[in-house]
Image (cartoon, rainbow, N blue to C red):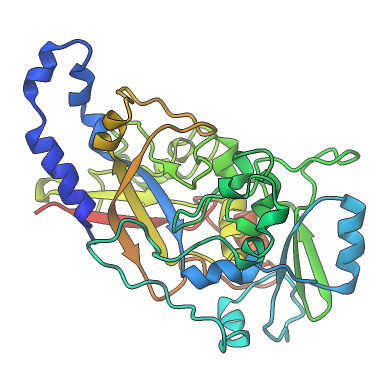
Length: 357
């Protein structure tokens, strides 16, 4: 669904003065990169930010000792569904919905063309709001209406990534660990699974502290979905891709597709925090940036992003996009999402098709 913001961007395109091309100091305002899709965000129901991995829970009795040993916060997740297969690694959203159905409305906000964010209500967990006076720089925690990325933000709150969600840090190395250390603990029926999640978006510097994931700026990605399969150096290492000229995408009919793939640790963490039922697509809010004295070109800096965004499209679904299950001896959450054993793109592929006719 296109939002009012998309119409505003079209108006900007049609009314910008072409005479600016004659002014070296202002000609860059006419650059087409200022008016294309610029970022993607992941979201879900607002109340979901108080449940799932956002809730402070005691997964099992031996987890407390594990946390004390690490002396670091972990992403703790309690699975409430019966476990007849003996697995401790999948997480079924519906079991959490049912467990807390008396206080938890898991339905995402119904989309409206007038939306300026993907969820209207606060997306800061109640557990943090109640402890605001105890958290240094509490006001720095973004309330964006979608998943934020405090792991890469203010150092005084970056340790809250395991409650605020939803993107894990790129590395989680502890003294004595030669590789990435466990930072995720899932419990069910007294059993515990501890694994390491490493954020691909944070590794490549593709997501800012507010949760805006930059769109790949490379042009000419038209060789099909096979170009999206390689993380290192592949198309997706530059962020979600806009592509055309492949099967099912008719450029002559005014169609273009945006490919969005949360990969490995990002996919698993988003699932642990309650999954994804919103995808927001954003353009630059050029007018707001010019008003603030910010002139193009607008370089990308994931740690100090000065870009301002305007929601131009929103996709909302009743079903959770990150639903998963075990397969044979493989964990749907850990092996399927975090390790991507059966996923060619190392994460689920979501495609959003835009028709400009």
